[in-house]
Image (cartoon, rainbow, N blue to C red; front, side, top):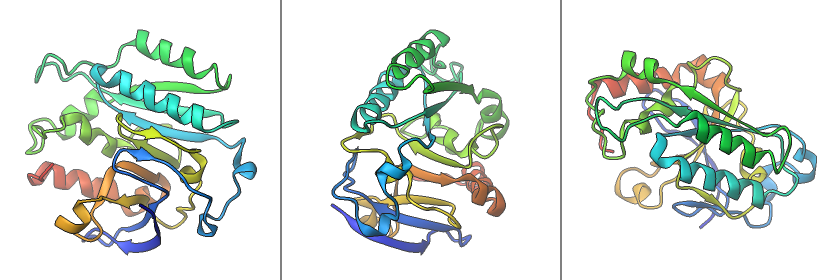
Length: 239
């Protein structure tokens, strides 16, 4: 399914978001012919940096690597790409909640540099941030694991780029990532696609949080992510 861009004040705090879909299914990001409202030409963006964020533990590494390969294989000439990986050690909660190992990150870097010598993967341990802000919070037992919460630290990790595409580890790309990444989010905190079922069952602007195009500069200005962290600490949410 595809829909044109629309603008929405999605949260009660009146944050600004941009709703998009570029041939987007539940767990696949694809593309048709580039629509005029994308506002860019792929050839003009061929050499610009792309920044991706994954979050997870050692158990989802295969998914992260597979997603990264789908991006690189479906986006000829793209690069350099930086893959940021937030991970943490919560083995005190569950034995399998182990951080992604240095050995696996070295393998990740070896694979992605076959596509562009300047591609890189950076592993960032956010255990301390999590324990300080979310340990024992009402949402620590989320069915999709506590690792779903750590994307909310993107504005607090030093050195993160202003524009950042967050992806769940079970995403696969069918077309060029630049169709999505180079959407203009100037003046907006993030861009997202309406969730296929949630937009009917929960709210018309309920989004699929597995694909989020962050404008961290704007998010820091409006403190949107800090507001989200406060909600996580205060109120049990349905996810």
